[in-house]
Image (cartoon, rainbow, N blue to C red; front, side, top):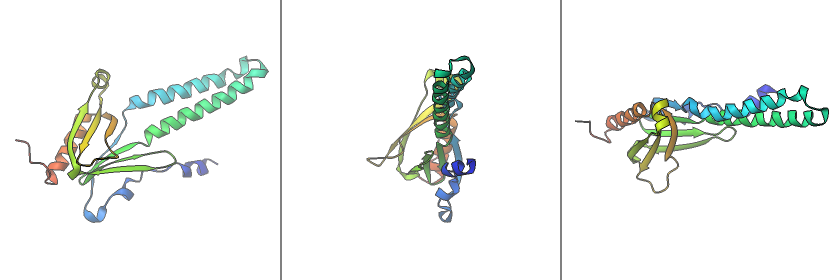
Length: 174
């Protein structure tokens, strides 16, 4: 049963999305900052507490509360898996965002289309060490614009800037 469930959840085989014959190489793989897991795990905790009430509640309501608690735990685990499987990849040719639990969605943007990257950091983001990217591109409609909750965002920005310089799309900093 568990193997059947695990087969439904996609892996993040990033190599299958790369253009290896064209020399594309991964520069960085970025997962969300740990802060995105606070809400899903709080939901799981609420579900576990509901299940834990089973022995002290009257029999009429105990079963319903336990079943609802199982649903809440499942929902919280799904939300945690959703965050865990949301991956931002920087290569020497492009940036990719791969997301989804049961249905995988891949958004890509070639380095040549990146005009500007804005790094936004809230006060909490500065304290905890995360930020958000906003990509401005040469395309009208883009599938990759906002990347949120990036740990060490300035380090990731430098990685993208280095890839742009290496690809000859930007001049070296003076």
